[in-house]
Length: 141
Image (cartoon, rainbow, N blue to C red):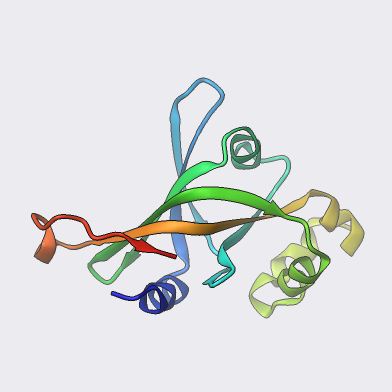
């Protein structure tokens, strides 16, 4: 499978399960809505008031898992904060993110607590029942 095929699968199935580690070393997993996956990385946003934000700032190593019609796509890597105005504007103005405008009284207020993370250079593998016993093949994203 190519990385372009993986990006397509992730974008068609944008709900991902994201695993982090809390301050006590315990794993934490939650389902969230990815913004997009592309050459720039796997991109999502969260609020500074969330445990997820605090966990990724403390330890940016994470793994995400997408369920794509019987195939799992798992990607491990490091998330980085992206504070570019361009990406914030893209997310803030995207039709699928209209709900964000209700989070604050102004765009600047939302920008103060909405944080964008990117996982660049992740390492991906797929899994399905058909290849359950085959060795994993990793694809650099």
